Image 1 (tube, rainbow, N blue to C red):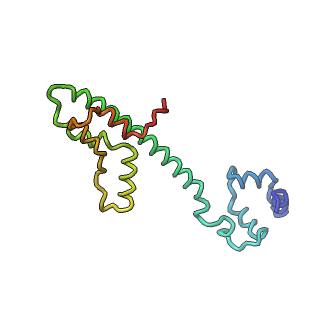
Image 2: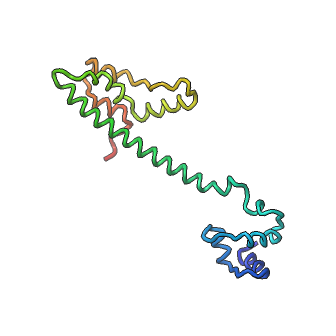
Image 3: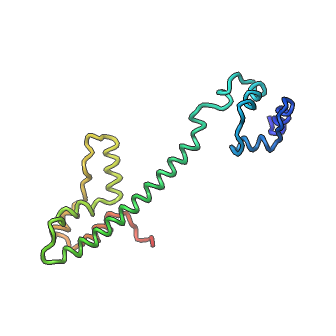
Amino acid sequence: MSQKELAERMRDLGWKWSQSTVWSIEKGERPLRLAEAQDLLPIFDLVSIHELIGPSWDRNLAELIQRVVNTRESALRAIHAYNHARLDLAIAADEERIQDEPSAHLRNLADVVGIGPIELAEYYERWATNPSEGDVPKTRETAKAVWDGEEDDSFMSLFFSTSGYRGDRG
């Protein structure tokens, strides 16, 4: 049935509907009143309003899609902030390491700086599939080697090796 035909049928029932009214209701720009919904039932050979509006999951689908999009964007912003915090820490750690007596906190920094977004995602995947084994993710072996002096790298190079940066971003 066309929008024009539906509007005509509703006008026959006393409603002031036009084709644009039908279009506005379909697009969600105008609410469908309960009394209007009742009069639509025989037009569509339906018995219940529930048949007209469909299952509740269908009505909420757009809201759920938007929730997923918003949550994904929040997660991306959080990963970006996480990487910036790791970068700040890597800079401070390299400055501290240069001193004659570096602080005791530096020994644990390799574990913190060395967990990039990729390792974090892998950790989450392991945790999500088996939460009982959800321990702190293990860093790459180079993280320990940086502290122990086995590598000539800095905490900054460890940061970039685990950040997921490809070097093509500004």
